[in-house]
Image (tube, rainbow over all chains, first blue to last red; front, side, top):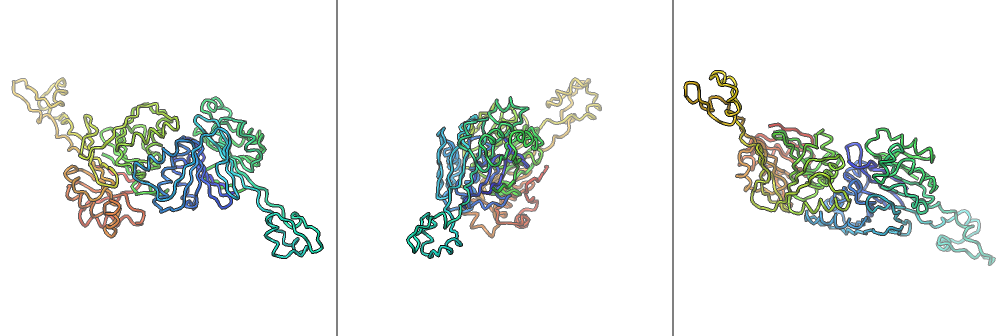
Length: 301
Length: 301
């Protein structure tokens, strides 16, 4: 998986600090997660082939997470897009986008499908042969979901050398890749595990923003390879975190530790902080592998 | 008057080419005209004190002219704005903005007033002691207005030297500034014109975007000090101008010439053109004083 952070600052956009938006590349998909104002410019800045985006996941309907969506949808139209676009987000998102398109008499000439969410329990919202996307219900000032994007366990790849040793004919290869055993000439059964290699461990990415410290996410994101968790404040402003329903760096790290994730990326910093390394320092008192999110950051895992 | 162009490119925003938005400083007002995506970032980039904006004029509801409005309205809220904000634009603009604020449970804590326009004849939409704003009905794919912003004739300023020569007591100064004559000690009347200077000629700015070539605007904007007129295409793409209901540089210049304006700024260039000086060359065949609009351009007149 490769994550590109297009923006990870809270609230008001500035020329050097963009609101939340991320691109996750996984198994041939280019998933867009959140779409604050200016996301389409950030996509161009970081040379993302954004015609490849077919699925957009919106956590909640605060402006810094979705005001860039209608512009992106419109730009796709202007660029002559033909492929379907699926948008997953809170109930109301369809009306907000389609009303604006209607006012501009600017209907898309590609298929635009809205999948409106209102469930407060985790649910599967996208699935294909290789990837599964689940919601991670969060608690914020409005209805909000994080997302858990997981690779599926893939086929065990063929162990060519083992097949040669066991003198397996090519005609059996498909059966083996599908998990089948093979009967040898002497009638004995050669188990599939002897003819295949261990598959890569499936990876997963959890996105949790915006939210209060909410331990109920822990069982849902347990063992994720990488977690992005908002850390709008430091502990010194915990009163503000409580008041505005955001998290502190320490709280993000506590979730990371309890969920035993592989790594933690923090972001969604309040504009009051100049030095974002402070978030790392605070988080590392709880959890070691902390990455300071910033616009343009690429993380592969 | 001082005009700052925040963006003057058509359609899709890029990091180096912003959609339509302008700031006009006139008689203590800071008027925002159009508000494409990213306008709030451009306001910061050019260090405009945007808390001073109290009136926003939106020409039409295509994304490149209004998708930045909801973000700006929200940012005003986050910055603790208290002053009223008046938004003038096509019918539907109120629903588009308020729906999005409602979805985010983000009501403004300042007064937000919408003045929805649907008249197809020119009308006065704002007036105070010193400035008048009229619509300039345009013809585009959706209901569209340009705007004519005119200074009013101001008071004749006091001619201090003349007052001294005529030995006028200070106590008469207010009366004189308000246009009154003064009776001299010998009973003769000293006319106001002898005690005051000629006022500055009132200036006016006309904004016409987006529109087909539409000569009906000429009598409305007649004699404007400065005209911004869209020139999306060159004459070589006139077929596209007709099809998309835009103007060419030559057409913009023809309007400028027929309306006998003081100067013409062109903009709203289609992305297909690399060299915008071509618009000036084409326009100058018809009208001499042409300025090539660009992001960040300041023009005082």
